[in-house]
Length: 513
Image 1 (tube, rainbow, N blue to C red):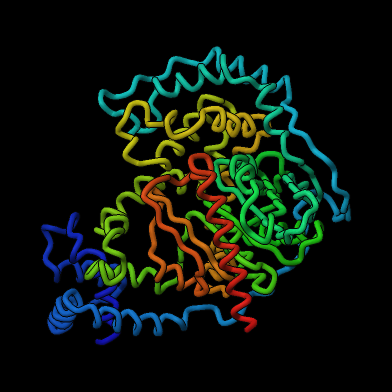
Image 2 (cartoon, rainbow, N blue to C red):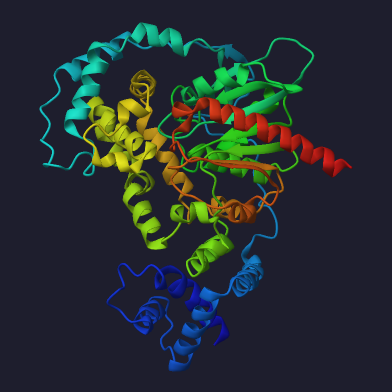
């Protein structure tokens, strides 16, 4: 009975007792019985119901009991943490044809294909009249048609392709073949000086490429009052932008991590720091789990832990939120049903990407209007979900429109939208390859730095992040900014990276004694 009682507390009490939005017409006992049936627990005795309810009441009123119960469950769940790292091939071939060796490094410049751009402008000029928005719907049903037309008109008539091409080439860029794929990367080496040079691998998210961090590079390169400077290596994920896609199933985030580790080794760096966000965090986190001796530190936006005890703590925390979350940030996680509703509402695109990327890709490859609508809707939601209720989506206030159109133009020119979407399918293919989830469930001892913007997709307090990253050395929670903060607040990201790396270096000095 004890195990059942514990289970029902987590699944029923924690999730729904204090957040009774959908279940306000159901009794507590009925809720438990629904979940008991769902999880094939055929019968639930009255004694179990009574015991569960009494424990829930006590937990809700007692901080110490909450903490003790959480600790008990956490220890119980540790048995589900993988006991050892999986053995991973370090040179799997992702290219076409038989394997070959090519370690050359070729300078690269972005040159938009003129025929492709001419076709793009023709399609923009002769686009159809879109179906009108519902009255008062703003962007809540998806991309507002008036706003979309405004952006498409700018892309057609005012976006200067040649000027933006020069802008995109202002940092040194290269291509090299790693494991059969041509990887496009930016490589910025600081001028010789007295400061220590620290290699920093920067991994972008979706829907972007290594173009995401252009403004961040500028702030990272500014002189700082530190004893080190950064050497920046910023590749595009295979299938994004000008990095070659694979046509083999299975290029999951950890496999990309292996490719990037080999890239860093080719450039002479066995040990390095990582900054990552969005889907880049999957890669960076898995790298810091696989290569715990070589990744010196991981700094991220979009910080989260997917450890089992994390979700248990979140569920139990609904009984007594301030036991888990600082009172200033409680409304970022609770009430839990509102958090779940918001996640479901904002993650529809994720499900499409993860299940039918090729179907969705057909329309986005064929129509620049469709491509723009799909990506712009993501940018609006990510900056501030409240902006969905505005006709203008706050899009042009939150972002520099040329930055966003750079991304759209790269995606159109490189024909990469479908291959970028497939990355989600590979991440979620746990039946095909359980390694992703094993790595998610394995803690890493690599020092970690977290930067939490106000409208990030998911908020987790530091105590939860430590389930995955016990050596959390730097954490900043902000009252502004959204998911694509590299476009909104590049200076804040750059400063946080510097602060995190300083603390990580102190961590190693302290560890060395």
